[in-house]
Every structure is written in structure tokens, then in C-alpha cells.
Length: 264
Length: 246
Image (cartoon, rainbow over all chains, first blue to last red; front, side, top):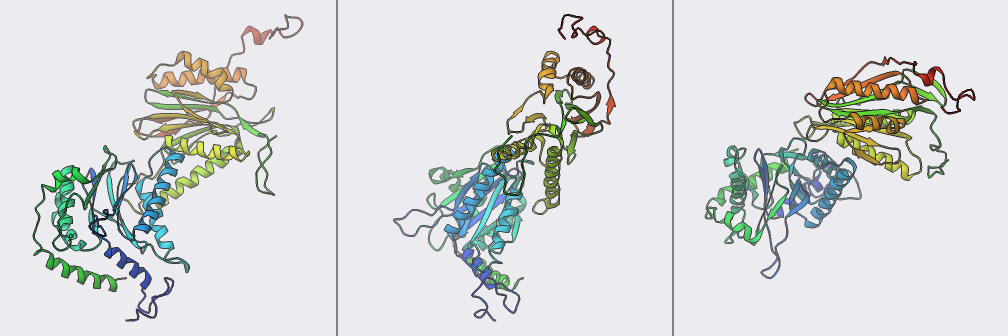
């Protein structure tokens, strides 16, 4: 209702008690291409749909390695994501130097959330325009964790999640199959991630080994990126659905957006 | 003694004033065990005779220190503040309560602290022993000195202990000593240190971390029996009546 008058500065509240700049930053996340994350009792998996600017250009890297036990998938402003990844890598390395042990992910995420929040309470800065899905293993308990950060500074932990454009269909798929995840095998989890991404591909395009990307980590397996030819065996196991399923999801997505704007 | 990079108006360590002497550590079949006396000396004066040089942090890690006692107190306060913050912030973004650092992490952390101070030419004047369990819940025994040198082994000692006790520990050490044997060995070393280290006392504490339960136990102080019947104590030959030797 009052969007235009109170949306210039991040430090200005709207009369409805909203920080519009923060919400606009979250909009930027929704423009990025889809990224999914899910976990079992042992593995955490990230999947991403890589976009390319033109036929001739490379596909933008969406999954970044932070440490042997932490990986992130990004959606939104890539430059902001790289800056955050650099910070996370530095924190992990510093901790390893001081304590001789890998950084417990919940400590990293706490600091990361605070870093995001700081930008929403300073006049001279802007919120980060990127959402992160962080797949990690807690070195103390050997358990996997999936976290999601948001430009607002809110931190969420998930069993499975998806962010970015057309991610509602991925979320719907993940919700449908979430009960099978805890005991799923490594390969099944990867196939689930790719299957979830299928619905987020635009129009007539397919999910291929060029534009798909997977990262997997567990207590026994250091963070590993699976790209290109290695993906083919997993892609072959997918059911490539038609586009008719997507209509309902797009409507859900629009409804969700309106809801999000009205939420506190 | 040291020139300092400390900010103006701030002092820096020049020499230790109130000091503790040796700390001994030994791994045994059920965990790790430390021993230290309860004396804090003021130069040549045995000033504080009930000073606790073995402490536990967060009920998971044992620290023992020789050297300047006030610096050890500062280290204790630092570790306790970190542990408190960890405990308060745990559960914020995760369910499991595994907030505390294990002994190996604490050892590494102290290395970073001591080395950092050494680089400012303002050391914490301590030799530290860190005992407990490592990341795989196996017994851990580590050593850190005032300039940030570290090592980890089945037996460690600080101060005079490294000269007098280590050879004895090496002689008698076997993997999987039982608790009674480990304690007897440490007591024997502490007794010999009392005989030969001028800054030692015979009132000691023993502390252990059990591997199975992770439990940290520090005994109350007790006095060691000593015997001064040896000929060299009864009739010392150091006078010119004897041969001038000691």
C-alpha cells in the first residue's frame, strides 16, 4: 500500500511494519535459477540448475565449495554470493588454524545470519541479494545439516528446500517424497535432487549434464561436486515429466509470493 | 627483560613473580592422569601452600599449569568465558548439545593464544598441560609452553619435571598401565621432585579424565610420605669435612 514512499532506504520502516528494501532483496533471490537441497541421516545433497547467458557462453557456477564438510548453492546476485563464500571459507580456515578441527556448521551459520542482519540495520549498506542453501556435516556428531539463509538475516534449517525461479515445483516434489529421505541411499538422494530440478527448467529446455550440477557430502565423504559427464548416469534415471504439472505449481508460487509479502 | 609492543600505559611481562612448579601427565589404560603440587612460590618463599594448579574447564578438559600463577588465572578466566558463551549460544541453530571444545581443540586454542602473546613480546608465563579426550573420544595429553610450542605424547611434564620426572616415566611406562600403577608412578615422581626441586612441596593433587565416561575428577590435596634417612641427607658430604661433593 505504501510501497513507493518508504522503500528507498533499508533503515526506513513502512507503515505496515515492513522493511521493503529487505523484501526487494528477497525478490532478487527469486530471480536466480533454481537450487535445491535435501538430506538423509548420513548425506547432504545440493542440486542446481545452471543458467547460461547465451548459447555461446558458459553455464554460471551455482555450487561452491567452502570446506571439506561444507558446500553452498546460490540463487540471486552471484557477486554477493562469492563475497559470502569468501567469508565462509575464511572463517572455516581460521577455525581450523586456531582449534585444529573443522568448524561446526552451526557456528558458521550463526555468524553468517548475523552478517546478513547487520546490513539491514545500517544506513550505508544494502542487504545481500542472494539466498544460500548450505549443506554441511557437523564434525562433532557426524550428522548432516541443511541450512538456508535469506537477505533478511533469518536462518532456517531444513530437511529439504528449494530456492530461485520456479522453485515451487521443486518444493512440491520434495514435500511429496520427504518421508523417504532419511534412509535414502546416496544415489537415490542425488536422483531426487535432479528430479526436483526437472520442474524448474523453463519452457522447452531439458535438464542436461551441461546445465545440472550436484554436490554431495557426508561424514565419510568430503564435499564432492558432480558435473558434466559424471551426471549422465543419474540423469538417465530421471522421469522427464511434461510441462502440464507445472501450471498448478506456478499458481502456488504466485500465491506464495503474495503471502510472503504480507507476512511479518 | 623483554621490550614491549604493548600499548602505551600498559605493562608487559618481565619476569614471573608467584610461580608454580612441575605438572606431570600420563596416559593409562582408562584415560589420562595429571599430578601437581599445591604450592605457589614467591621467589624462594613457599608462600601459598594450598594453590590449585589443576583445574577443569566445562567438566570436560583438564588443564595444569606451572609458571606465573596470575597468568594461569587469566587463562582459566578466558577458557571459562569461552565455555560460557558456547553453552549459552548452543541450541540456537541446532538441537544437539555438543557445544564444548574437546581437549585437543583446547590445546590447539591455547597454542594460538600463547603464540599470539609471544609475538607481542608479552608472554603468558606458563607451561601448560592439557588433558582429556580428543575428537574420537580417545585419551589425549598435550603440552603448550609460553612461546606457543606444542607437542602431544603419552607422558608430559613441565618445569623441573621435564628433567627429573620424564626419564623416570619413560623407564616405567607401558601402554595400558592400570589406574593404581599410573597413580603410584606419578606419586613416586612427585616425591622425587619434592626431594630435589627447591620450589616443590609434598602436598599434591592427582586428577584424571576417564576414557569411558569422559568424567573429570580432581582429588583433594594430600601429603606424600617422605623419607630423609638416605645417607646423603643424614651426613651430607658437602662440607669440607667430607669430600666437598654433594
